[in-house]
Image (tube, rainbow, N blue to C red; front, side, top):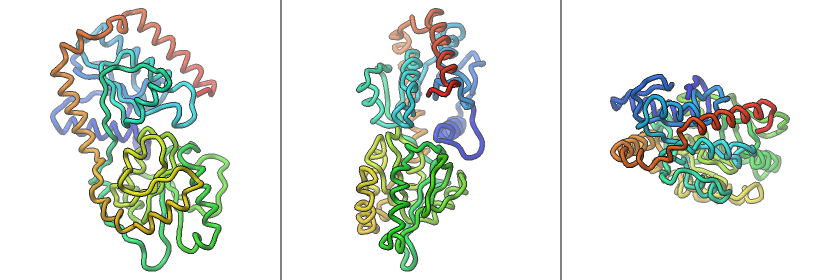
Length: 349
């Protein structure tokens, strides 16, 4: 990947965290396929038409064929069509995975989803959860205010409506009613979908790192209504800051949030969930200090995985399907991803 500066999505945050951790542990990290002695190649996104992507599956296959045939390929999957209502992401992930020796999913919900739709991925796989930096998103115990309103917050880099806007608009309507308006505020940090009209949501510009952490510390409850979320980073950052979670029972959110707040199914039961988290606020506020989805934990699990794969390298290389790295397959990948790039430019996602 090409690391992006400023506020960005979870992929860039992962790249920054992992590359820094590996370098701190004496490992050389590069972002192009120019070196001839690369031991492990991590594919983070096969969509080479994205500005953040420096190379894709065809380029990796060429590197294995022409430069170093015993480099190990790890494919990290953090996407799916169901997340944003796209049409070709799952297909691209499946195509790219043909050259992977091992797959890392960021949530156990993902492999089940792909099996359900008949997509085949590498037999060897791991689930390594996302994590945020606790030095930045530092725990501070939260308490409900004795006077004034309970402040609810969410934040999203993506303006996609499936990030929970049916829920956020429901809360906006609820805040018209005195029973909620007198007790709650709802704040949204980040990019907003076009043509969204609200009356009772307080908006803030997207921000990141310490600025974001300082902003999150002003609130009492973290809300995420994201649908089919492969993992996400937003709720992790809120949880590490000590905010009890109101989270949608969808995608990988339950496996990240269970035990640290109250789940709801959608707009229809949001009010009940809000009442329940207020009633049990002290319990969950105390529990937040145990939340452990940190970048340190995530990165150490990747390093342990890399070490295990290198220790098994001979067996892994011997079990490869060599056809996935021949000229015909490389050409096929290049043509297919070229076509997919053209389709993307036409606005079909």
